[in-house]
Amino acid sequence: MQDTSQLPISKQLIKPLLNITIATRESRLALWQAEHVKTLLEAHGHTVKLLGMTTMGDQILDRSLSKVGGKGLFVKELETALQDGSADIAVHSLKDVPMDLPEGFALACVMEREDPRDAFVSNNYANLAALPQGATVGTSSLRRVVLLKALRPDVKIVPLRGNLDTRLRKLDEGQFDAIILAAAGLKRLGLAQRIRAVFETTEMLPAAGQGALGIEIKANRADLAAALAPLAHLQTWMAVSAERAVSRAMGGSCSMPLAAHAVWDGQQLRLNAAWGEPEDEKLSASNDLVTANASLAANNIETATAMGEQVAAKLLAGGARKYTKVE
Image (tube, rainbow, N blue to C red; front, top):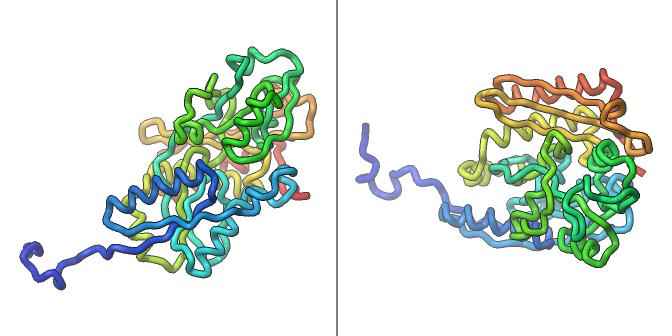
């Protein structure tokens, strides 16, 4: 074997270093995520800067996402920056990314997952069970609405929009007895002390992709795909691919009453999913949530995706419906 270390520099196989601009939302959490990716890329020798942007999802706060176009509103402006060349990559919370990207774009990297669970946040109550009857709980996630109704049909669920700091401020102002947030965001911002209790996945199944970061690029940027490859975490990527396949088959919207979560048990990938009707005031875990699961020895994204499609078929056979409601 030839010793390339003694070859002239022009003859060695050198991975090109890139000047990379990251498009990011300007919320504190989004900036943390972009800075995290920036640090990792810089450690590999790349030069990186951020391009902060305000998305339509950040601007429309008086209506639920399901009524104004879904969580894809958080990524469209970032994709425009990729398209016109003002940015090279976009860092997303994967649960906010539509199941099917526009033509010409690709999900180039899924990073290792943070805690995927939901967090109970309250200034006065230790957990969901401690809430008094009729207590006000804030969330705008249809998934959390149906799962909360199954756990505590007596509480009043009130829409809650805004970035993480805005939601915490509204809680602190006394507008809610409790709010439900993603544990990952609180932990990333050093706010884990605000968590009073964490819902186990057997109680409140997470959203597809929750806790994972995804990096989007233009599909023809092979140089960026190569630069991002060291940041990817294959086991997380397979797990979220299974979860997102359920969501895609159920209608493709990030804003629907669907939970899907996959975990590894040795070489086996176990996927659980649940679906419910948010308008059903009598929702209970025993008879109104439709659930399905599957398990297999997944070894690539394609087999994980196929398992997700099988679980979606089980949900539909069990009485769930494809969700296309956007008002």
